[in-house]
Image (cartoon, rainbow, N blue to C red):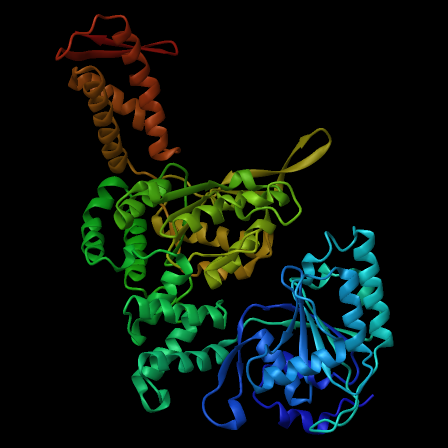
Length: 636
């Protein structure tokens, strides 16, 4: 069946593709279901081919296109506002539309009609008594019925009538630009195509579904050039600086609608932001936060000071600290992902900490938080072992519509929406379910995530840190042990204390790569981490002594703060305690702390509990000894 294609392409040149699709098929479809980006503004050609392009809301865009095909008016129905004629009376075109509507439909009452009353007007438009072109737009159609499958009798009768009307509608001929028969269409505006009863559209060739996409880069660039007029720039192409600013604005607006770009421009004008600084206004619009810690002048100085402070807190990891600070400096300068064409929306920094347990991975994450944001409360931790189930990802982004807890949102998305300037630690990432890992692809690539409620959360100002113990152990499949009649692979330690750091780094990185590519079959996720894999070394004897001294000093300080006691340990007892706590370093710094607690804090607490303590008393540990599994300290 012909759709008049020889002339339509040129006639609607410059209109959005979905509008050209609708216009080109008016001769074969009587109803349309429009979904997707319904509430945006859209680029339309200039009036009568002269001047700049225009930005129109969807209702006006539809009317402009339909009017060029000889349509006299649009009847708009909304469950809240009832029936309205578009365009409104008040000028020549509006008065003509009102006259045509009254001739075809009679006098419209001001009150909101019932669905039964609306059907009369739908029939009058779809099967007109005279050769007059009109269209019906049903806005918020998703709200007409409670659910597409559970409807009240009146709702079911309404949709049944519309289904029959789609097959009995009459094409109309008029004199003008398009004299061939065209249907007077009914246009359903829905949030999702499935919001209408499935039997209305299924196997019904008279109903066409059209999805309205979000604007692409070209649309945003053209819109940016139109909005530049608000800053006094009338000819962007003649001003290289303005053209570059418009292109940057369009790139930063990735994921936004054209209407959002209009709102960003209003925000920029209100805050006296220049055209060149529009990306900062985009950030404010996306995040809803005016203060940007990344733009503070003292941050660079704090990071420079961190080159001395962080190694004092994270002991024995010079390579890991140096690489982490390098990535942090890159984030401060806004150069993360600078090699990509569009990198502005990606997270400020992405780090993958791998290595033995207890070597300072979590401590380094806290150090970065305190360094950048001045407060460890900006540190957010997720234990990924709690997300080993496939459905547990709902805790991160929220349950889908219709599920219990949908209104609450997700733990991750809620926290980032509340404060987008965070360090987010995903601990032991290899324990998460592979399907949950897929959610990180969008975060790492686009810097955003859509939660269960449909809201977009932006991660562009956050630092994401993943930790893993991958590479610690490997399997020897050719060595097996028997148990209950089955053979099992033996796990062996892949790296061990005393191994050269270069070898440790090589083995761990190889294990991480193998896990993501072969075990999880997620090489694309590994590519997003790139060279940001930071490998931690085992705690060596020199570092163990420093950690011991630091933790021992913390114990003495706590005793002084809690009980106003001055505690000292004699050299021989202190040396014995040091040997006990640093003799085995497989568990790293955390193991030293646990050993100190068992070998010193517990017996010290027992000894202090049995004494009458006086403020400012001086106590000395003169000896420390083991009796079986019990440790005793001698106090005087």
